[in-house]
Image (cartoon, rainbow, N blue to C red; front, side, top):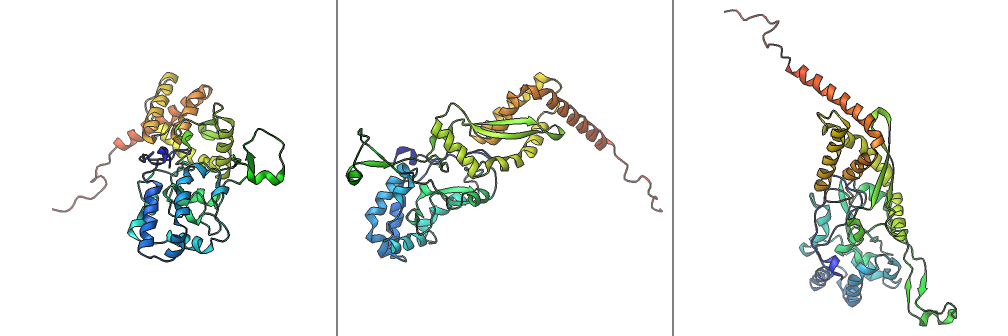
Length: 347
């Protein structure tokens, strides 16, 4: 297991953020120890797990490097009993396996790390728990990702396809019969879901939001794209992730509420210079609050700052909002005496 998989988790964001990096608190060795405890207590199917325990240990430690090439981690068809035992292990209520429920606990994350939208968080098996696919990772912490119901509904049991073998040999011509004698690796697919625990680029600013002025002076979210400075393969993976999980469509639903909150933070703004200053101040606050450069609030605010051509229209909306707030405040100061219009009680 690499060092990046053993560092301490940092809880990011109190509201939604776009795909983000999370760090693990448990190692594969600790998860394996829990499985060994299950065997020692002779839980259901313990013999089938014990029979292939060395292979379980090997795949647990290989996960952090091979999750991106899942074809290398699939079970053999002959492992049906073992698959059933490991599949059922996730449903165990044993105290030493309680860690598997940690991602669903309130406060574990502020939002779904797949999409960055706040919602009800449950546990997603990054590589599906299906008996015919990856049941052996049912209790591996690295495979248990906190996720919202919408993301799980779009992701379902998807995992990156195996696109073939790339032979590590300078000779381009080879005899097919000798292929098995050569060392090889699986070709990595860009059509994959980003992994919050291992895609370290998620800790950097990877996304750009594109906006246009919409109805009622509320800028509409047109698109979300990866930064061009990223590697081509990384951009492709990000684009596929956003598309597969319908992140743009769902983020659009967050804009109106977020924009309303931004306007409330502009009370007293009267000039374009003050508007820009307010946006920059709110951006700093959003990045601090979210703990991520890809926090959706920050992403949207950054887009507003860049689009200076929209600032005059935005200022007009701010002035209207401020005028409404003044009238409401003045109306609340008008008090009608409680005894007004009432007959005085007889003495």
